[in-house]
Length: 338
Image (cartoon, rainbow, N blue to C red; front, side):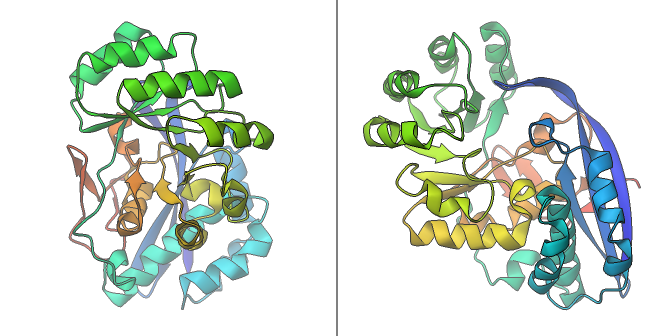
């Protein structure tokens, strides 16, 4: 296979703020794998919380360029297994390579990726749209300027209930909230009760990822369902979350790509847990890959391209929460520039 790396820095439409940090630009890395006249694209996102920068990601991949370029792709899953020992300390880089391999494999077969898996896309869930932390007034403004059927609202402030109360005055849309580890046990229980009254559907990662003991009490007593994010990074975490969360939010970038994500989905479902996939503010390359997992999912947060003022590619299209696939094989993503 031929390997090419394309780093990007894409501006956000608005400053994007969660409980931990704010940013105006999202660095991303797109990986291209080519074979027999076809090219597959994968993507991974820079993320300071996990100490992953684009230079670190590029360096990790470059160290194994010879192996990758001498490889003849037959199965993305086998490719992942052979890459894993080399990238077990860098799931972000592995993710981009895995997505590109799945895209390439499907293109070589002349099929859309969901067709390779024989999936029915007729009942796909709608994606939410994220409202990042800001002043209450600005959060209301962001909501009003972007009417949407489902909103994910980032929380983790001293005014969390006030924020949802004010937003609720302007829409009847579904609300989900994401505290990004910002609350404690008592605060989570108080907020869950109040948020339920305000029509919130579920809470994502209310408490620090390492507070497994606290989650036992919260899981028993919460008025709302709870979804793990920072507590569920890789495959081994799924069973840890059973009995502590009602569902898991899988990030392809964090778990190492589509190959392990599918295994995580199947395991969570076997345990009776709900499943969603989330966004790391990927562009249309990564988002187009997530779209092919939709038939497996209960919920999805794939609004990265909607939050960004720029993009890397054409591909999946999102209108009022509904996802439309590109009429191309693979994931359907095509680079705008390289």
